[in-house]
Image (cartoon, rainbow, N blue to C red; front, side, top):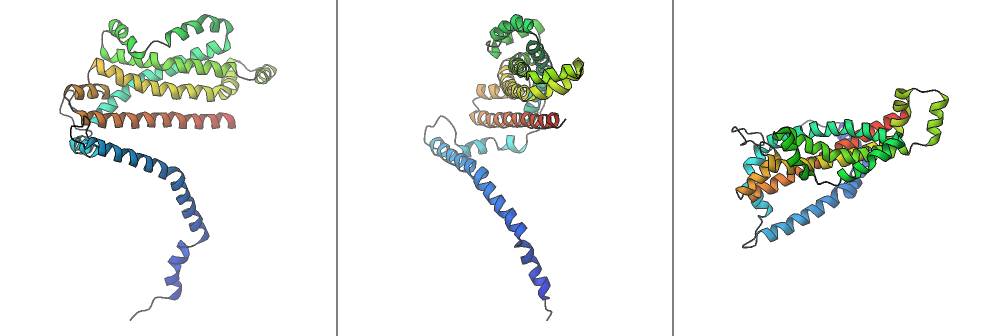
Length: 287
């Protein structure tokens, strides 16, 4: 009969009960109670209420369990491709994201450029700001007939709707950030004789970056809202068309699943832009 050395038998408990391990466990538990438990409790309660209401006889909306049962194939096969518009939700979302990427990138370039111009030039502010204030109140889908008439194709029309929806908060926030640059920063730039490009990179961008990224976060959310709405009308592959097609076919469970995906992707887009904002503002501050 073999015996286990005393040191070996006590090594594991000592490792797991070390002060560092106990501190890590305590931090993890506190983090879960602070950040993890509240959403779990709230979401669980909402799902329970939804399950009870959706399980009643004659309920217009399916319960969560029914949604999962009806859409199980869509959940486990998000990238199937049967040709045409009969593709999985993964492809539908990727098609929408591609349109958003094109329109949003264009909105960022134009919006930051015009925001800098309006923020720097009083003449440009007086001339362009009234036009911006009028155009930004036009609902996104109201631009769709004009874009379809101009481009005569659904793809560029959807991209234009994304652009025209996202560009306004970027312009406004960028111009506000530029106008709020402290006068001391401008005086320093004159003293050290920075040229236009150096002033933009070393003074203007770091000072206005928080404002710019606030506009970018608003813009990316509006872009995602706009493309889902636009795709319901232009057709083709895209999550918006999928929702509209599911409605025409009375597939309510498919609509609910797609809405959950839309919300989750929108949340990820917002988090991505927020993370980029933190990275850029830290980098510019350090520089």
